[in-house]
Image 1 (tube, rainbow, N blue to C red):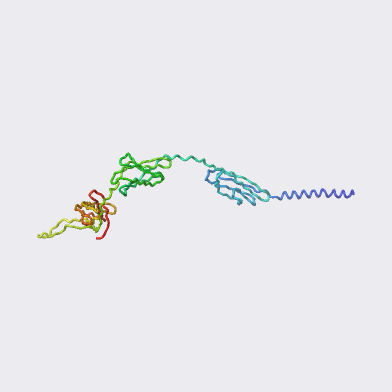
Image 2 (cartoon, helix red, strand yellow):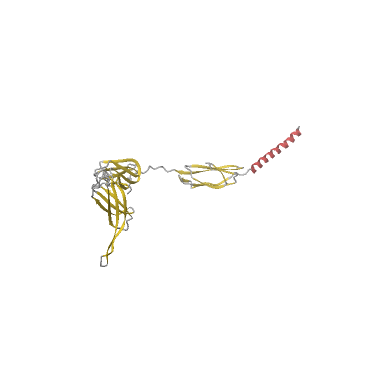
Length: 330
């Protein structure tokens, strides 16, 4: 029994030595964890809407990840970011030796909203125009540089006892005035107010309504206009003599009185045009009575103007009222 104790006593120290050597070998073979050589943001502070660059350099990592939706990345890299608020990004680098982490905060400055600057500028009124399409109405138009309402003050004097308005905010304004008197001068002033309440008004303007049409009516049976030349060489019995050559524009018309009353005076106006420009006009007054249903002819001529390329004619009664013309055949 004493010999056995001596034997066991020999093996116990030997077993303990082997265990310690194995543990030491295991510790010495485990690799070092990764090294984060660089992880920063340039610049680290930005204003909302600006961007910054997040850059990193990692050594000896088998896996590198960055949170906030970036995910797994290479050991060296960069990414441009434009966060909407101050935020921290954390990088995790891992290998068999363990995981190391580092965080970077990007500071985002969000500007404090400033109250809008009060609008104190009134609209700018331009292009004021008036047109009278009928004897009892007129259309007033103008423009503004910003949306605004429309108002027209008008009357037979600048006291402006009448008003027409529209609350629609627009830059193109049109107001129709109705219930006017024929052949009458009206003063008017336009006004516009923007959404902020700034108001602008024009200076005084004036328009004249159209004269009421004549109760008489005529039917145009024929119409001809052209050019003619008079003068030149003539034989006076003693040989040829020269007279001055003259050139004329002329218009010939045949009309029928379609009214139920006798027309005693008809004012005929020959209008000579170059495109849309009135070059000249000539007036002829037909004074012979024209009974209902009867026809009459006349001719007007005027000195030629080579720029004239069209001739028209208007008719009015003895009061200057426009006579309605119907077209017909000869």
